[in-house]
Image 1 (cartoon, rainbow, N blue to C red):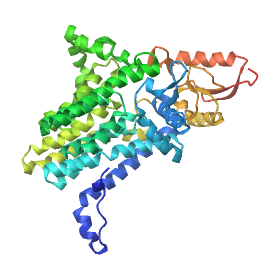
Image 2 (image 1 turned 120 degrees about the vertical axis):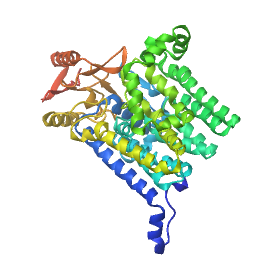
Image 3 (image 1 turned 60 degrees about the vertical axis):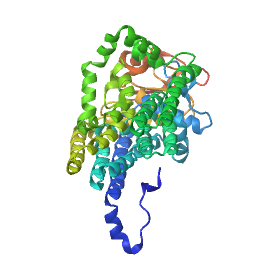
Image 4 (image 1 turned 135 degrees about the vertical axis):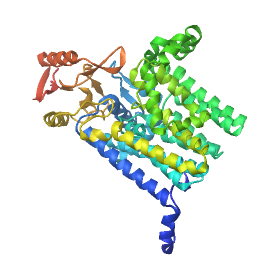
Length: 495
């Protein structure tokens, strides 16, 4: 994103001196490339072995595929089976920018590669911030490596594609540009970040407040804050209802504290204890602990920048949906950038002789925790968040053969993990929704289904079995495949 991302070309006679002068930057680039390669290998294996599902990978695949086909963000609503524009669920038009990558490599894996590679770039602004404020190439380099080692960065990069995950890097660049008083490139990063999700605007507004405190520049701060608040308000109150004919289905995550943004504000005044209770549950407290330990809580030494996480932290903590206060969930995208950047500023407050040891301690602590809770064990048979446990080889083979039977342009209904491989089409439904499907792939050992009253999957094996039995008894459907619990039905042309 800036000309300083790569060193200038050296003269042939000065290669050794050049390498010494830029040793840390070159080390970071090598680490970024290696990090990307390792994580992509994990994603590739998880996809090939049916450990990830239509939720959320397939949803993003269909949106990007539709955009590349000339129908921007057109998707099949998993709950109703209707064709809708994705903006009715999440306002993340950033997905449109991934369509060119799909045209180059039309595979769900290209989205995984794009997400991992983009998140890795966040190490660069961390390095530049450290080099400027810590006056030490070594401390800056160690913190950049610490960003890559921070377990929740790797976990989020590996997890099923989410546009908001791309905001991690965009927000880090945003901090760098604001710290450099470069408002134009900051504005570009801010706009792109806001297109990854409807709540990012509030985070941008909080970042504007930090900029005012750090620089005392009121007019830019007011413009940044106003733009951020306006985006989130328009996205939630105008865009989502325009495409959904109703309020966001995700308001249900906040039923206990008001059921909507306005309801939460009202509850804060009328029943503040309900808000306090929601924010002080054991899982919420452990969430903060897991976020802070890898960074040794050094970000508290820069409280103004660390406070930028509060809007997203409150949104996660107030939610009834427990995964939002799980550090493996993509809700950390608007939290991690500021905790990492605040760690840089926090270490700046230490004596110069303690900065390198502090940066080294952050790297070591993050790396040690990553070995335990990071994504690496998934290569040994575990699964990304939202996927399934290790799948037996016989079932992987059966699923591979089953999805290969379905024509590329056929409307299909499929179980969750099979659906991740069948989403690059106009009509793709999730069991037990049938819609216009002319092909159905049912994995009896994949019990996750959709319902009309929930935007998330629920575990109901009896629904899966009843759905398969109903199709098996329907004369208009023919069973064309049955192996290892995986069944494929084809609708008769006459029917």
